[in-house]
Length: 120
Length: 110
Image (cartoon, rainbow over all chains, first blue to last red; front, side, top):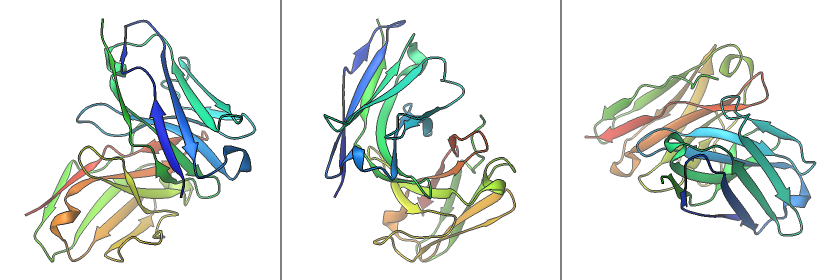
């Protein structure tokens, strides 16, 4: 059974870069057939899709975040990562990593989520 | 991209049925069958309920069903139970090769 676990700083200063890593176990990112995605949720609000990456390195990003987002993959560590630059308080949220079925585009496995607060 | 439109809240009594709508455009829900639904309890990660408009993954109760008509997808929960009280989100693929979620609907079981 696939498991995903987010890790990274829980506190980031404004204007800095938020960096998170998702470690995948129980499945190999290299196997293909899935996208590896990031989703966030501000407190008390809904889910927001951030973007995704495929094993080929192909990425898709939310247009509203595209200028600040980079998603990358490290197959040797079976991890994928999120970088969000120039953060503000509006980027404070629980960040989830998730596996997305490559054929029918649904999220079948999620990490538990990690809270990132943007504050000085 | 704009979030899909869901009612902020719905409610029902135990044993009743409720339906949650999710309205988009011809560039997302109306154009593709890549619609999925998720259930989220407080403090938890979302859980997949429905994929490809109306398919249930193994392990999901058959009390959950879904459909799509035009630009609107719907999730129906029958035989409401207390444990169904949660937030529900729809999601769709879009014509710009991105994904978009609905704003979420809070279900209260009275």
